[in-house]
Image (tube, rainbow, N blue to C red; front, side):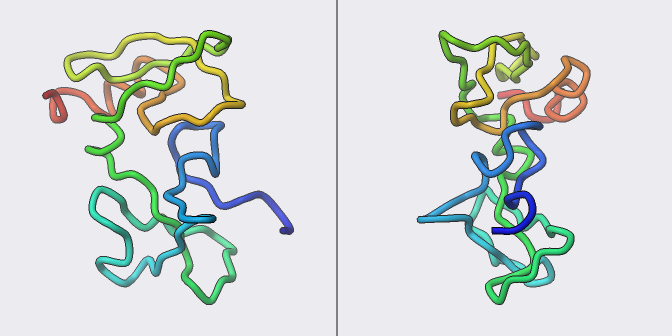
Length: 119
C-alpha cells in the first residue's frame, strides 16, 4: 500500500485501529446514505482511489462518547475519555487497539462529548 493507511479522526494518533473492519477497512461512499452500519458514519478520505468507495466507516460522535476507555497497564501517553458525566484522564499505549473515546486534551473531550452525550 502506498501512502498512509485510511484513518478515522479519533483517536488522534491511532489511525487504522479504529476504522470499522471486517478483514480490512470497511469502505463506503460518502454521498450514499446508509453505506455504513448503524453507529458509524462515512468519512471521506482525500485521495482515496478505491472501487469500493471514497471513504471509510468510523464511529459516530454519540458512539465514540459511549465507548469504553482502552486503558492499558503499559500506557504512557496522557489522554482523556468521556465517563458518561465528565472527562477523566487515563494512560494510553498507542501501539494497542483503542476505542474512539480517546482525546488529546480535556477541552477536546468536553467539547466533543459535553453535556449532549451524558448518559
